[in-house]
Length: 413
Figure (spheres, rainbow, N blue to C red):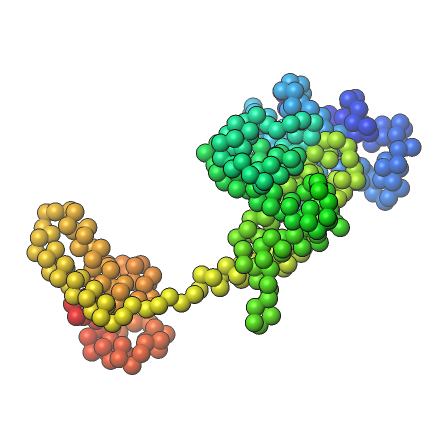
């Protein structure tokens, strides 16, 4: 496969004919085509035709990648030789660029479309390409079957539902290509999560057999949100705040659905299904605009609340026993530490645990305390805001002893 610059493949009917003056060819030979006529009727016909022309190039390149032979057409040819695997398509104009040039090109690309460009440009472009390559594949990928489905997934209803959905199996295959067999457990989990969503969509539609791909559209976006709310147990707290009981699943489904929509885009471009392509791009636009407010923000809020629960503080008697044990260990280790690296390490850990237990409300601050700060800090240079945050007893101890003696008192008493 040889990268070659700007030879254009006719996009009408995805014919395998090349022309150097593609706009002129479209005007003369395909002006009766509804899509071409609509583009020519709009102002700025050259810009309008650019992305449409690139559809033919994209289709040609994916055919070359699938056949593993032929001329590979790129948007910008490099002076150095590169493997075609290093090229990815731009989500806007669909031309192929080197993966490390893709981000810079995407930001400057003048072609516009309905889909929104996310921060994960290379991942989304990779999914778009894999969707196009999988458009004419039938059955389940052998590697996915051997390395994930047969070895890492339970033989239950969720696995059966995942195997029945073409988009879920293509999604698993794309993850396997990108992550490798070492992440087979993660891939199996992602596929089973989408299978759970598929079951919820069946309940909402009251139909025995539906595909997630059918709902990756503008009208299907609301149904997917309803299915996520049902599966992740959406509720309102006492203050009327929107939260999810299973917040981690809601967040993971959001990432998976975005990638599935990119896969569907690639499959539709390859198969020439303009209606489904528009549905996928409309879903991506809604996902970018509304998914954060309707799902991600409530899920993240629930995640923060679940991690901020107060735990029961230990009894005073237990703390006194721990203090006595720590002080005894420090005295024993100080006498025996010379020349023994293992004992020095144990003394270091016991001393740090004494500091953290004493300063239990600010344990992370003590764990980050540097020896230079401990030795060189003077009482006169203590930040005023820190002194203001101290209790009255802490202020008196700091004023009386200074930081060095102050922390020494913590260790010894």
